[in-house]
Length: 247
Image 1 (cartoon, rainbow, N blue to C red):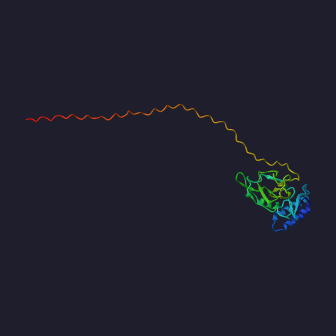
Image 2 (image 1 turned 180 degrees about the vertical axis):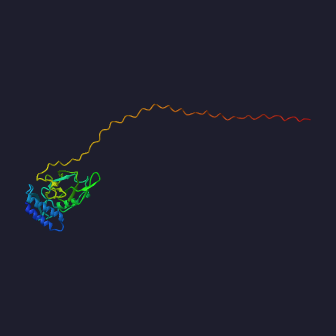
Image 3 (image 1 turned 30 degrees about the vertical axis):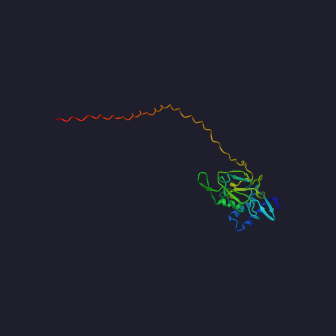
């Protein structure tokens, strides 16, 4: 039995959830404190994104919350700083392998990994991680600077994943409002998920025919030696009479 619901959570409840999570020794302290600071800032500043729409599902008496991969863990993604159903593309180097991601408990853990990771760029240099993408099954992908925010090909509103949840994406740090997905509380214009195509090679002109070589002089016929003459038959000399005896 599973029941899916949407939770529009006031900031007061989110502060309570953040404080509860911060008490756990398994949660990065810096991550929990940053989330609390951002929550208080939204409460005081009255940002347009003062409510986070978070899905939750009950499966056999156990609750699962969007943005978290382990049961009964409820740390809502920070509204405005993060976004549901979108990713920064490319998600990782293609093709994806088991080394393209790590497994984390929640979106905030994935964000914390991004803060402390250097990623290789196309030119061979190493730069700090810029964005993260946390999937409902716990996969945490990290992205560099040359990315574009697009609708996720999977784990989006139209194609939800486990428990009907969506991917959660955001910057490496919520302290810098300029790096938020929605810095002004307004959804930015995002592109479509890119289609991987293969560029055809240009048609090469046909190769010219090889030049015609002049005819070669035919080889002379093999020399034919005349046959050896028949062996000569020697005629025996005639027998001369003996010389007369002189007196």
